[in-house]
Length: 365
Image 1 (cartoon, rainbow, N blue to C red):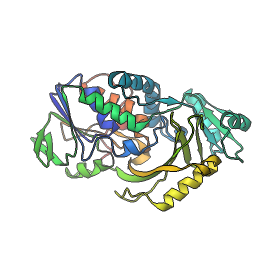
Image 2 (cartoon, rainbow, N blue to C red; image 1 turned 90 degrees about the vertical axis):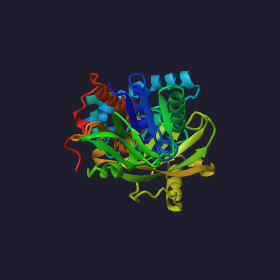
Image 3 (cartoon, helix red, strand yellow; image 1 turned 45 degrees about the vertical axis):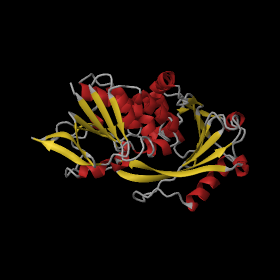
Image 4 (cartoon, rainbow, N blue to C red; image 1 turned 30 degrees about the vertical axis):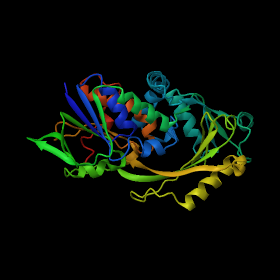
């Protein structure tokens, strides 16, 4: 059994991986180049579903279903142990005027998910603040959103309470230590950090680190911008999505609207164009937001990957090196299942789902 595991990257994937491993290994060290959880884990919306789940492969669907079913108990466990509530808020989700509604309904029937067509009048009855002119709606009950900054805070608090877990923030990893074909640690600005196993969970930066070994991981930064309004607590009773933009209600009346999809390298600068575009989408979706103040506007970097299928498992040819990264737009959605599957693989347990679609073997350049 591994004695010391070093996890490179302290987003939700890295933190939850550490949380899952801590009970079964001697020591876990999580290293992050900044503060843990302050990149895409903090910046995202936190819908516990892919935006259009029927458009994804079976590999993404399998992780999403497991995670959706698991999130409520994860939230309760973290709240119970830390006193910080991740606010897993079940509201359901309305999709409006979809071009591929028939495919969505076929997917739901095949996957036995609670998604169905509803009369547009029922959508307006359920969400009275909805903008005019929508003609079709489908609804999936039971879809939740998680308040991701609080999820990060609760995971951090849970890990800090464990005697065998160390969080090293502002710790830049520059490369890997190797000996006899095995990865034996990571190189930091403060020297070498030895490990029996190294886990790369560095989000959009994962490809850069793997490139130091001459390996090409097709994960790249994809910028997304969000805006935040403050409304009454009962303003928006359900999540709504139209024309690729969504509105997410938090329990305290904050409404999150997102998001853009931009290939701008590592630039995280919020732009005026995106602000105006997001605000226009928000007002079209929920006209009352024209009178609401934008209380936040930010950008984050998603770890873009082919088809959004993450890399989970051992890196062939480099014993001791593992990947749990490349979740693209669905890191928060897929985190519980991805991290449980990863822990199963590293610890030699029976995996919760078939690990083959996520294996790095054959997918690296």
